[in-house]
Length: 92
Image (cartoon, rainbow, N blue to C red; front, side, top):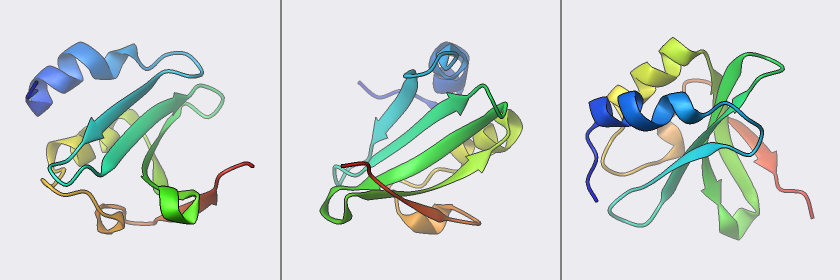
């Protein structure tokens, strides 16, 4: 199902309220983009997982900044979308 960014922010984005809630998108090449809310910081974490490296590349955002990122999200996701990327290794 194709969803426009306005629909995404209106219908799904605001459902990121609890630990474990996340929004995931998949681009045309099968690459994932995920975001979740961290209530303890009142920030959102957006990431692109890299299964081969068992890590994710991402960045923390305010609500407004994440909406801005979603509005300009390219058709193919890469770490280049992040201004200050961080790499987080996955727990074993």
